[in-house]
Amino acid sequence: MIKQATRRELIRQAIAELADANGVITAKAVFEAARSPNSILHHEFEWNGDNAVVALGMQRAAELIRTVRVEVVVQSHKVVAPYYVNDPRDNQSGVYRPLMSVKDDETIKRGVLINEISRIEAAIKRASAISGVLDLSHEFEQMMAAAEAARTRLDRAA
Image (tube, rainbow, N blue to C red; front, side, top):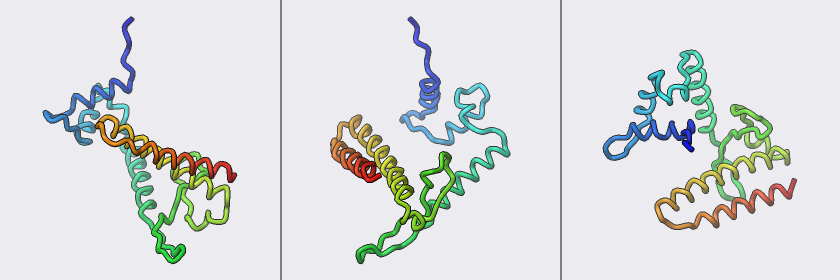
């Protein structure tokens, strides 16, 4: 039985073929290769000028929103935190609320923290996979357990 390559496998292969002699890949090389309508990478990009400008503008706007910080003193320690956080009730990205405005709403506050824990878990999974491939320390299991415990505590508080 002949196995057909999945789109993901074809994309991986196309990117690998762009590597230099040292195996290094650049975003520019991938983008340039994707310009060809015959490339498997082509449909991964927005080529309509107006749509591309809007997508890039939305991405930059979100980056700018994430740069805004608030300084708060908590138990005599200055904490610098994001001023805006994603609204957990929003199914699409792009809706942010001031962090201080969610402080008194238990449902939204819990949702904001669960979103943050999800990001932590994703980073730990990525680091754990990398450390496994590189045959390095596996301390990430303890970190994941701590993140999962925090999520469980938040779920129980609901």
